[in-house]
Length: 330
Image 1 (cartoon, rainbow, N blue to C red):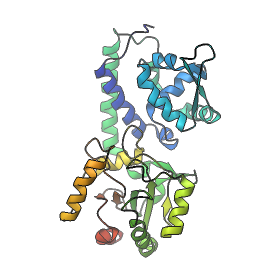
Image 2 (image 1 turned 90 degrees about the horizontal axis):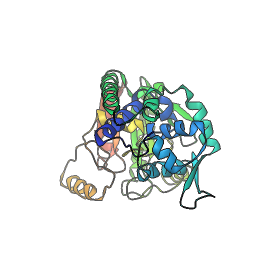
Image 3 (image 1 turned 180 degrees about the horizontal axis):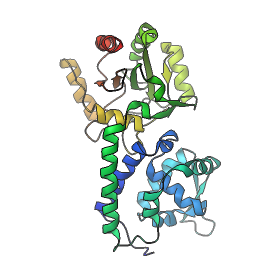
Image 4 (image 1 turned 30 degrees about the horizontal axis):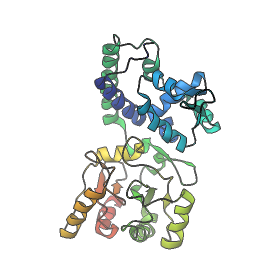
């Protein structure tokens, strides 16, 4: 392998796009474990030897070390790997799989690795990148077509705040509301209104699910257990709370990637709401592309058959869309 060879920007862009689509459309196992496709590629590299220098991993993925490092940092935070200084060279970091990482590696053997093999195989050279580009274009086209036609909210799974897997297929025939939440936000009092709405309509088929998120001004710093206790004591929340996730960026949960793609816009009604919208745009550091979540307490209301998804801004209070809930419950 030519160690100096790096995939050019156009190929990397195709790889990035294909990775996101693969995670959403073809790899529910990755979604269940909160993994992105690039993280899966790291697990592939570590399959042969579960302790390797960072530089070696970067070379196998045809990327610069400073590109791989943030990815490894996230995996370390998730408890999948550890990083420690090499005993032979203090400048070199050694990546090792944890017990959790090894278990993940074993559980992901069902994931198709056609693209992964194409990327990390020894045959990828500067001369063969046009072929890789064509392959990636084909994968992207196929996945775009498949995702557009078949993906629905019921195709996803996620972890509850107790670490239990929840299959969204169980909500067919229910009106579903999904909210990204935070405990230290100016919109946190909406927990009370959401709970009131839930109590009023849960027997008629309304399900509310809260996904805590710490991507906006660090307003959800607690653990899943601390968040659940806060919501129970301060707001009497009984609707389902999930494991804390990201809603924007490379680590965004596939459910929110799907919701953003289906309902990319939200309305801010009134001067106060519009002024708040302008302020939040200045504060938000993770909303970088069209459709991204701007702030905490963005609400998605989904019809009984999953075909209609309405998006409500953080400034829109639950009482303001109660009629929408009533209509969907009919």
